[in-house]
Length: 249
Ligand code: ADE
Image (cartoon, rainbow, N blue to C red; front, top):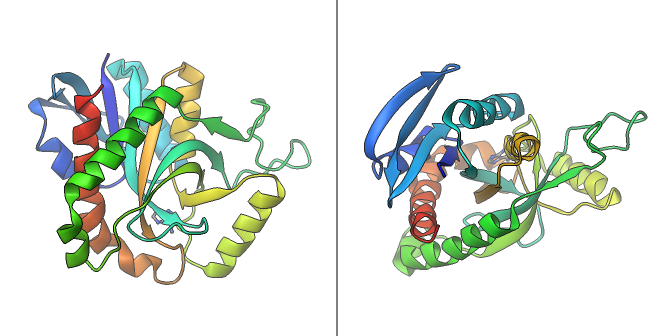
């Protein structure tokens, strides 16, 4: 039962790669897949690349060429939900594409011919990821947060909205939230890949779960916060959480 661990960013993947026993590098579709074992599990580590199409391609190759039976995604996201702060973590319950609009042919946000706008993550895998997030972050310790002037992270679970845009404008966030709310959706965070991974996993019947560390509030500060945050916070969080997750699979 090979597990795929997809990361959005190289910095994040480096820490995970160091855990891999017997790493084998395989190139496909312009991507590097690292196959090996972690905690006795067969795993494949790969970068999703950025954006929905790239992430869908990566997921398809994982399933078709590497026969993965479970997919977990770790990355960063912009917080858009009330109370979702920089340094918090969101474990996805479901994904929606905030930039999908085939109206008037289909209701806004609905994935054409799927009859739905949101795709749920796998409940059992997500519950395991949520538990691992709590334990993993507790292990990171208060000293770590204090040294980076962050509050202790809160863990949220809910809807994540994906789109092919880096959102860094409070007006855009207000519009995005209002439009999604009007259609009955309450996003906690925005990013650029998850809904695509969820759709491919849905098509193949492969369980999927995702966690995103909040790197910014999708405002003008967002591009500034980004790289340092990934190195200093999101990467150690991903390592701590996935280390726990693997242990209990
Ligand atoms: N990933 C991290 N922050 C993001 C943002 N503000 N918009 C889209 N993707 C992101």
